[in-house]
Length: 190
Image 1 (cartoon, rainbow, N blue to C red):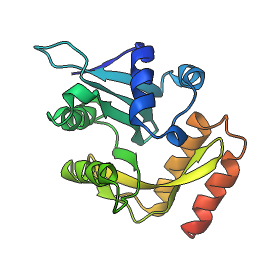
Image 2: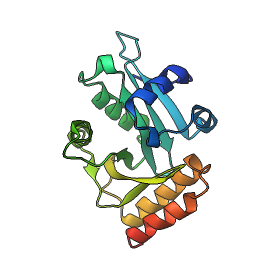
Image 3: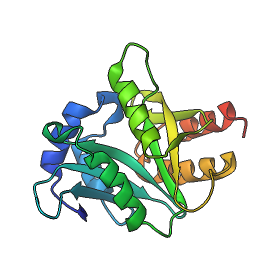
């Protein structure tokens, strides 16, 4: 079961181990972001209340984006990630769908292959969209996956409108955020 939590210290320590450094924000920045539309959830089972994993969700007007999703290492490969994604559908029935930022598949990196296959098994589709994740050093290219809740895949204009909403809420501290957004528009010919 997903529950909102403020237990960020243990989660952030795990994030430092499981996510690439260039995809993480500083602890203090996360703490400033947690508000009504940037939410930290922890996942546990009803019978076993030990936290198995967590996710951070950006709640947009029409869509959500799972900014981070992870299962603590000792609980990997037990189906908890799939349960989190399924619960998100039930938590946000009014939204059209959920976006996921995923590292591009690298032939020599089994982890990137496993992550992509995980999202595909959850019926999320890789979008034909060039996405850039902004960070303090510039940006990194990521794949954007989408899981529809009630409608088909959004058009490019809907995707870029959502990205703008997300960027200027979550990444507003990045000085070059406008340039990254403009580059996304340009490479997607919008």
